[in-house]
Length: 415
Ligand SMILES: Cc1cc2nc3c(=O)[nH]c(=O)nc-3n(C[C@H](O)[C@H](O)[C@H](O)COP(=O)(O)OP(=O)(O)OC[C@H]3O[C@@H](n4cnc5c(N)ncnc54)[C@H](O)[C@@H]3O)c2cc1C
Image (cartoon, rainbow, N blue to C red; front, side, top):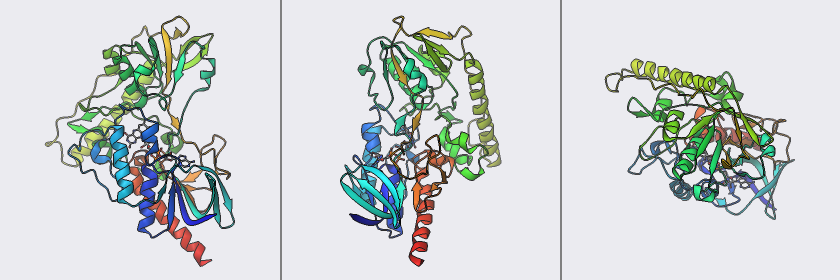
């Protein structure tokens, strides 16, 4: 039996940021990690992946980007190196190769089974990631057996796929990037497009994340967002990080020769059926992009930056071919592969505490888990602000939760 004050589960950027916050507050703790530091970036990301957030934004408590390419986009291998360096910098007490299998409440706080050890702690921070499992729609069960299916967590490069056509399902950050990469390998690609968030890579000479931060959008707090559930489940923006900082929207993909179709709704007798609402879906995404660009322009004017920045402009509406097919026969030989890029989910299924709703989502108020004093969750989308979805958001989130955890421990000691 090992006893400690606090346990952080997961040594990704969120767990490491929390470790630094606990150390700052002299709270004894241990970080339990089933693999190595930055395990997700080592084992679940494809090698060509680059962050879609610019390097200058990859900041964590006590760490700012100090490289020579602040406006570039870090490859996954550099994210691993950055997090490994950060773990050393903050002296995070990480126990690697240690999987937490269960977490239960006990009279002193929490009890965990980690490998063969039993651990007790007064407080626990879950930092096991928002993208632990791929979201695979129920219709996957109707996939014809001739089709190879895979998810982004297993995808490494196009060479892994059989020759032939590929249907990529989902047109968010992952889907658009993988569609482009697979297309470059010479395989014909069809991209099924549901609700999506369109944003240009750069606008008026600045990266879109500069605008998202400058306008205050990323700082919007969870308790001030009208439809929080929706905000927490929004798809990731159609953005990729490339050395050329290119925009990867649907127009650029169709210009490459990628066919776009509507949302994949059903598979019946081997025939994939797509929504007929593609044009409407794209119009809505264009509208929302323009709404944000209006906000950006208003902010620039109010901030007196209009003379410094290139003038406002708008992007071409998304082009949708009126002959877009509504059905494609997956058994006719055109397709050999379906790649599910329909999003990711956290995995808190191993918790032996009734803190999840009927959809499996952990119930929390800005990371303070409901009904389990001393339990916290970090690293989920829009946890405390819209920035929580991204690496740099863990800075403020971990600070706020560490403050709460500290007060909680003080309260316990007083009793
Ligand atoms: C494809 C992709 C691209 C992304 N691109 C960006 C980007 O460009 N910019 C950005 O800011 N964000 C990006 N994100 C979002 C986010 O930053 C990452 O998901 C990030 O890895 C989340 O960090 P984390 O520390 O919360 O979780 P993770 O990095 O997933 O870390 C969780 C850790 O917990 C460990 N773990 C899980 N369960 C257990 C257990 N039971 N016991 C012990 N250890 C456990 C895992 O091994 C892992 O190391 C991207 C996400 C994905 C999936």
